Image (tube, rainbow, N blue to C red; front, side):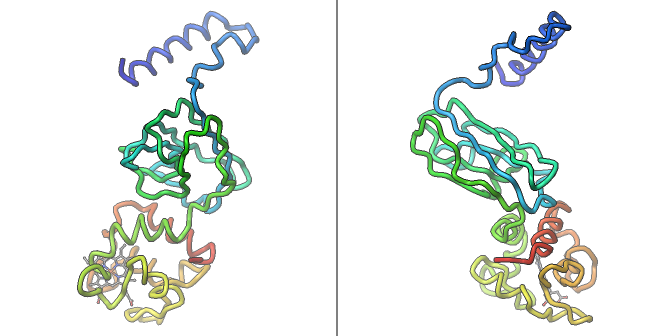
Length: 238
Ligand code: HEC
């Protein structure tokens, strides 16, 4: 039976049950272990900083990966908490012998990870609470991997030369942009001005057509600009 069909049936069954037992306030009539398929179980209990950079077109997954690290064996989409103070608790059960890593990761629509916020080498533990309590969604590592590596380095530093002599490759990007004056800004802005996105020329260039090579279509989703801005607002830390 396909997953979709199963979900459909389960939904239909819950409707019927809901109808049959309307007015009965004993919450225990449903098999409470339906989701807890048994077998090894891992739980995450974390709060998030950089909440503005919560993925929108992408999703945040709690996932167990096998050898390839690409296609989750089991995964759940984490729901956005209302605030950074809120702890989010999610469990995955039924981990099997294929599982090698457990991760909290930003993933595309195919549930392939594009950036791993946190990962844990899984060793067959039966019951595991991940040893992490806070995840920063606007970490520099995410800006590097999800933005620079994917959309910028092909012109800025990979291969022989870097456009505008600007290197956005992992080893060089931070030192090339944070508190570094832009060579093209008429207003002598810094490329990245910590805390102040509006004073950061990189944001200008990605949102307005102001240099010879128009950058406003380089990024396919607005949320990537939000990610850079959130990282800047939080101090542009490495
Ligand atoms: C197709 C090639 C290409 C891609 C992809 C590209 N750039 Fe550029 N970039 C350029 C060129 C060319 C210039 C110089 C423009 C000019 O001289 O007017 C430039 C200039 C810049 C500057 C200005 C540097 C300064 O000193 O003022 C910044 C900042 C910048 N790019 C950031 C980015 C970011 C961030 C990305 C990815 C989201 C990116 N670029 C992707 C070609 C590219």
